[in-house]
Length: 387
Image (cartoon, rainbow, N blue to C red):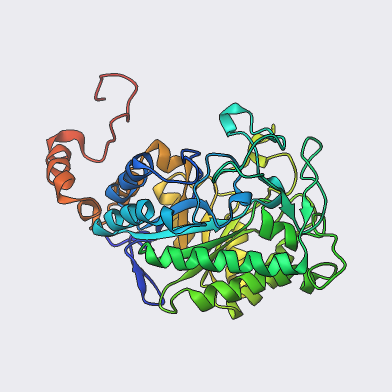
């Protein structure tokens, strides 16, 4: 049997071997912006596990944009070698490798999640070399009641910031990456410019819907100009948020992004308020964001990647077969099972199951499967009984 999930996807000159992407998830393990052997081990296991696309976590184009002091960066050439090492290994295992470039804007300068994700005061120095850590945003409006009011960017500073992203894109190319994704979601800087709630400017970058889109579109236009034409460009969007941004707004924006050269929309949601849908009393159901990917795909005429509680192989296969998205991104479930792709191929009965992983593994796992274990994972039962 040949499944949709394990069919290749060609975008520009890049072919992703299957439709499974590792969702970009911050690991908060960098030191002064540098990735390390920890990151290499982290991403290598997903490449060995068979994921088609390894998307490296939100990496900051500007040190001011770090969500925490432990975010990775790409604002200087010194960061290239560690990222290139990850890319080279993952590609040697047949994976396509991308990187998400982001900037947290007014949501920068927080403690790491397991320390409360609390805003850090101005006494917290910058990530790079102990510089002053200035919060910046489209408007001088704090992200929350405990957050500091950010500096409102001037038009000149906006143009400089776009060029900062451009330089990060050139470094991504030097690192040998296949795909760049611009982070325009979750209440971070690009999303802040689009939001009527966070952006209350009265110049060309604020006010009307078209003006609020301007920063995102100019940024994408510059990135697309610098990023090789044969390489794909993704954009992560909050398809809806808690402060008035609607799916109809997203469709309009995505139509314009497509005209500027974006190839795929990575469809998430939320992040503009202090609360989180995942922290609410009523948790969302499996695939709760998939309808956003489906609507944007249909109405904006652009490829989409679905993300959000996509857990099961048959669930992912159904999303693709029904035309709701072109790829699925797996996040925390991939942390739980780095061999999710291999496991999914087995459970779906895909003919390529044992080709999903390196021969160093598949030789032994085929023997295991033939010894009575079949498609069962290590924890298919609670105890030692095989019944």
